[in-house]
Each structure stands twice: as structure tokens, then as C-alpha cells.
Amino acid sequence: MIKVSRKVASISPSMTLAISAKANELKAAGVRVINFGVGEPDFNTPAHIISAAKDAMDKGYTKYVAAAGLPALKKAICQKLKKDNGLDYDPSQIIVSNGAKHSIFNALFATIDDGDEVIIPSPYWLTYPEVVKSCGGVPVYVETTREGGYKMTAEQLEAAITPKTKMLILNSPANPTGSVYVQEEIEKIAHVCVKHNILVLSDEIYEKLIYGGEKHYSIAQVSPEMKELTIVINGVSKSYAMTGWRLGYLACAPVIAKAIASFQSHSTSNVNTMTQYAAIAALEGPTEPMEEMIKAFGDRRQKMMKLLDGYRDIGLDYVKPDGAFYLMLVVEKLFGKSYKGKQIRGSMDVADILLTEKQVAVTPGICFGDDEVIRLSYALSFEDIKTGLEKIAELAREVQ
Image (cartoon, rainbow, N blue to C red; front, side):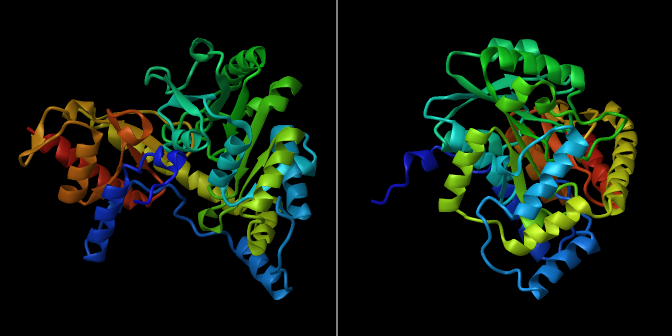
């Protein structure tokens, strides 16, 4: 009998696969499915970025390049970090990888040993604990509250630290909650991390997608000591509508960057060369397409919340998101009821019934560590948002 490794066996299968498979079956059968589960912008990649990739191919830039990234791209990333975040990095501290998820894996693989504890505020992006486990680490969850905007406090962090704590994963703006940590909150968390010499993986992939007057503040900005402990994760997928291009990057202390560069040279090597030239165009090119996309998301967010405000009396509530393009819809008041004989015991049941009975795809909150909610993306047209929310409200009114 063939056995897989213990590390791979420890990874939990995605709980969204069954719903995704059903949604695809319905679409293949010609059924119109409104998909609130999307985790990518519904905008096309801006034309100047596409042209840069075409130009690279036409010029013959189709060969291997340095495993850690094109020097010109690493320089552009350093300039971006300086301009947007006030952070000074040498190009040798930048590693370009196949998407931010790949950057996260590389960062954990290079720093986490068997048994090391990694603190993860909950709700969390479902990939974080699985990557921690695959690298031999132990996820430690800190439960946040709706009243606190799904944000972990410095006091909660302090209480969760043990002698085995190696790292904190901090995601702001956050997937799935849309929460944004403000500067004062970040500074208090940084004080605890420096005090206990804890690394921070700061996932900033949604950095540009902030609304309502809040501003992004990287924990690496707090102090030189905190910068040394921080691994900044970012990329071009969300802000520049480049999800399929697969390019992420990280910035970190030289010793960590050197280790990751060595590892990547033996695993995936370089990100495809044309994508790297496209990323240079994204970082150095016009910002208007990005600004228009962000404005559209902000408008949809406002309209979505306004519609949901009218559904509180039927047992639906939500937590106001300040960033990314997700909203957590609280559906716990549907639990214990039934729809057409189907019992509703948790978020998976709500998601299943919405898909099979209302043709609306959502992501169950249990995937993110909170079974009382479902995640809704507003990276889809407002027409679909409005229709989809009406169908969710129908379900809430029809349960018994």
C-alpha cells in the first residue's frame, strides 16, 4: 500500500471543494449561478500591463532569469516599498515567487521548525493553517470578535504566546473579514512581538483595497527592530487584476531572504519571465486603471451594505468591512431551522442550500474558523450582487 508523507497527510482538504464542484456542475448544465465566492477582481488586467508581456515575448525575453527575480523587477519592488510604505530594502532582500501564496509557503518553510507555534487570528484565510502544518508548525488560533471588528488585540496576542511561539501571521486588510488594523493597533501588536522576539508574516496583498478613510500601515514601519522581524508579503494579483499571472513577492531580513532564494532555486526557480516584465509595468505604470477598479469596489461595498441594512429584521446581519472585497454575513439565526426538509446546522448547510435551491454560491464561514457566518465577495457586478442578496433574503424568509 502506497502512503503519502505525514506532512502532506496532515493537510486538511478544502471544505469548499464540494460546493465549487456543484457550482461548476450547474454552470455546465446551463444554470446561471451567482457566485459570491470569487476571490479575484472581475476586471481584466490593464492594457499597458498586457502589452508589456507581449513586448517581452517579441523581444525574446523568454529565457531563464535569476531564481529570485529579475533585477529590474526587484528594483521596482524596492521603489514601491519606499514610496508606499516608507520602507528601505536592498534588492537582495526581495524574493519574487509564483503568487503571494507561494511567497507565504517559502517564508514559513524557511523559518518554521517542527513543533514551532504560529499564532493566527481567527477568522483566517483558510490556507494559513494548512501551510503552517505542511511546514511542521502548529497553528494557534486567537479568536477575534464581531464587536472588535474581527481584529486581534495586543493583549490577546500576549496571552497566546508560549515558549514555543515562533511567528504571528497578520493579514491587513484581511481575507475573509475585510478588517483593517489602524496604526495604533499595529504599533501595540509590534511592541509585543519585539518584546518576545516573534517573527511576523505580514500579508499585505490587499493593501490598495481600503475604503472609508482608513489607510494601510505595515507593521514593518513601526521600528527598525520590528522591520527585522517582519516578512512582508505582497503581489500584483489583487491590486492590478493579475490573479492568473501568478506573481507575488516578499521582503525580509537578509538571512531569511538568502535562505529562501537558495530554496527557490532548487524548487520552482524563477517566475515565468514574461509575467515579471508585466509586473514591472504594473508597478511603474499609470495608476488610473487601479484607481477606477478600487472606486468600483468601494461603490459596490456601500450599495451592498445598504441592501443588507434592510435585511436585519429577517435574521441577517453583517460586520462592516473596511478593506479587501469581502463581507462576513452573519447567518447563525438560521441555525436549527429547516428548508424543504433540509436541516440547517451550520454554515456548510446554508451554503449548500443556497447553491442547490437558489443558485447562489457562497463560502461557508467554517472554512475560516467561524461557523456562524458566510463570506460574500463583492468582486462581481452590482446587478449580480443585488439579485444574489435577494435570493439569500428569500431563504431567510422561507426557513421554518
